[in-house]
Length: 185
Image 1 (cartoon, rainbow, N blue to C red):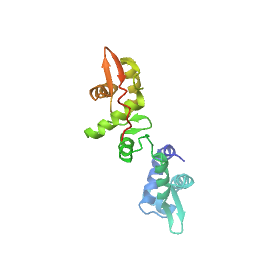
Image 2: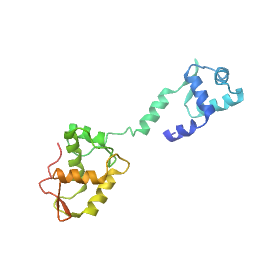
Image 3: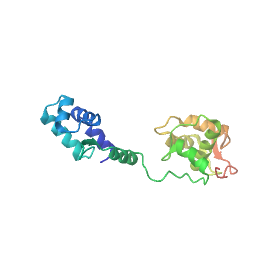
Image 4: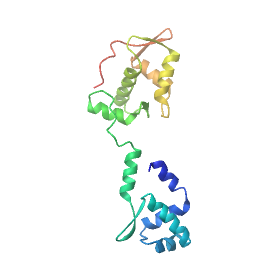
């Protein structure tokens, strides 16, 4: 079961009401029907679906919410695998980058200037070859991929990269300086 399956499961108002009744202490099908105001048959059907998906479980004390199942689903939805490695070799830099760069996308630019500079240098190093020339259109296209689904736009990134000298601009041609090759850290 995925997080999407849980959303679909709770798309039915009856199942939501049954779940809420169990979460608030109903321990039997009869109590669930009474607390939800549903007909016994409707309550039993909704309860059966929740039990089939292991969202609600029956034990010695009666019905209960399977909070462990929710934790497992939350971990799976969050991608509980190992943290993303950006290849800096510096744990402090990795922590900052994991916060603002996820799955090859810039979530948002950091507000703190030192963190912002670190993230922008990372983007420059991962996006542009040192010494290679790029047209403005190429720069924009490459930066757009970082911005998809995030809060920053490619024009802002391009301006910062030029202002911080990660990219040099001359006569409409951009190039990453060969001196900008030191790893972040």
